[in-house]
Length: 409
Image (tube, rainbow, N blue to C red; front, top):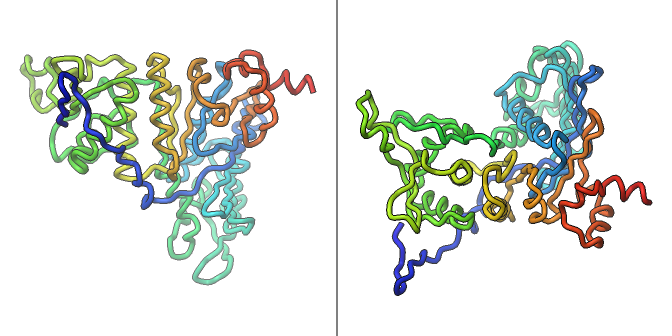
């Protein structure tokens, strides 16, 4: 991308971020409104989640080992299970998985034991569409017949997966679309920094949800969307704190100097930073810098290629300094504002907690093996009362205000 010259100062051309107006015609997904879940029920390692009522943009906060990552992991695995990309949970009870879809409430529940589904129910606005019990037997509403019919599904399969049928049971489709379009990123990992891409048009069959394939995802985004994609990445990366005027793929310097088969076809990502004369290759970037770039690349491709239903990011900002970590969160929250995309992030960083408004908080409160979520949707009075103390947001956790305020009443 070219820069405009104003005297001795380089300026980036004025342009609005590409997502302004983009979501007007984007896919609309139902949104997760409530989740209650138990795994390994009745055992010494039983784990229970209650009170999770997420909004549009959510920051899950809590003390170490409170269960923040576990909450996102459960949601991610539920999506994989509903999308048919993993088997049902071995021993778990999804007490209530509630979505809002154009004003309608959709609720799904299931219970598994020993890898077998022993109960499953799907309802829309209180009307039962699927009810299944032991032995895989149950009833399901058939649109063509206009009534509930009996069915039997293998015990090791979910009925919402095995009985998917757009003609007879189209009411399952929004649930499948939500699950198939959920993206999950573990920010504390390398996010593909150690991986290269074999540059070949035959190598474009990628998994856009696999962070280790970020170089290939960038190539695919550049091939499919060109300058629109590259500019979107640059427009997001600069406000994080990394002004760059160019991004692309290059054969790493190391591979240029060695003799090995296909060495000249292996490429990685590079950026041209504004204040440096040369390019910075991905192996030369700090871990935090590359993590931020990787997430921005992958999300921009996901938004252009297939609007996400939900984005989960664990340990957001890990490896970044305070300012850039907060900037990245700001970029992500602005990106989903006014969109059909739901954002859920976790953090342990006190500075990030002080930066993000309490209205976006979901406090993960663990009492032994039971995790309860408190946020503005279910504990507004407590949060509003804390605001009058004049303390920093982090003090809400440090002073255990969630419990001390209840005790004082």
